[in-house]
Image 1 (cartoon, rainbow, N blue to C red):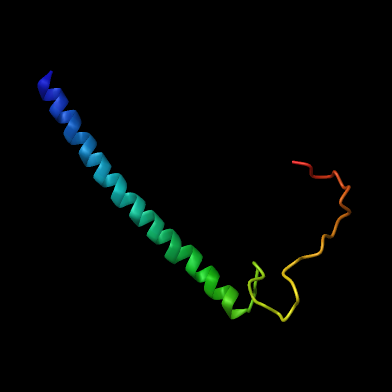
Image 2 (spheres, helix red, strand yellow; image 1 turned 90 degrees about the horizontal axis):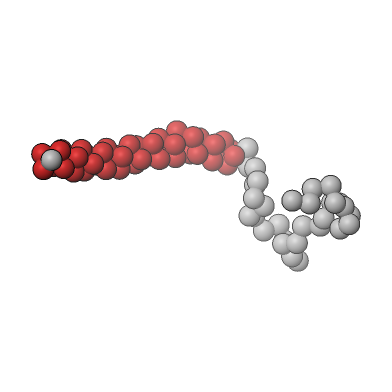
Length: 75
């Protein structure tokens, strides 16, 4: 029984390290192969999807397009 506990402990330690490496690689690849090209493309076409640029307005408020009583999308 002691041998199986040692094997299990070693296996779990190996799995932990492999999981850490896989997570790092996947996040690295996702960021640099997906998000970076999209960001560069948006900067190239000067798109401001989050409306972060200040356009000299007096407020950041965005007027509502629907009537306040609209219950089309409640939740």
